[in-house]
Image (cartoon, rainbow, N blue to C red; front, side, top):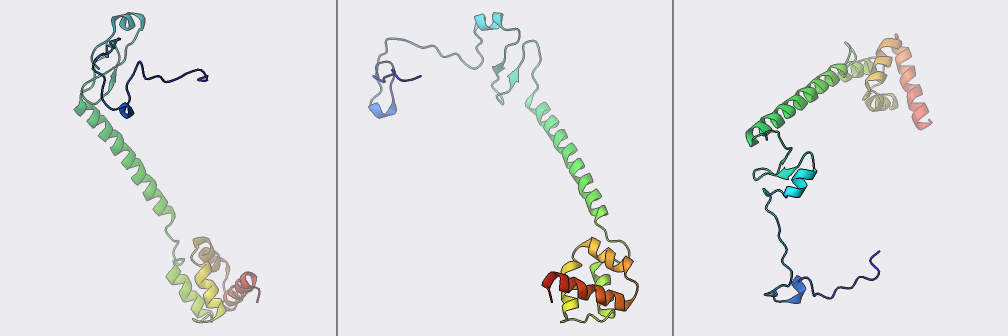
Length: 163
């Protein structure tokens, strides 16, 4: 596409050329931001142009919003988003609350009651698996005797570490 293009420097100036040329053969008119070309204005049904304050775009026939109106709208959107986020966090924390008797403290007390004292393999595996709520619930709700609890912890250790 650009195969036959060659830069001669005749129609432009670049920083590497040193001094700025004083005269040009062609003048180029650059419109102000607020200036609208009449031909474009007639041809297009809606014309978008930059405003001085904030660089927002405006359609023909519509009033532009002031900076304070835009700020109020953005703050309102931000407040709505914050409220949604707070609601999500609250529902998440509610769902993460432990059922009665299933807190880590409660379950570890049961572990020690069944004979898995600190320093044993069964106590160690309990500290690893009871980080998860579903494992604590399983231990509390499905095992009814201290012997059954200790046997379950012993098997969990054997499954994980192969002893």
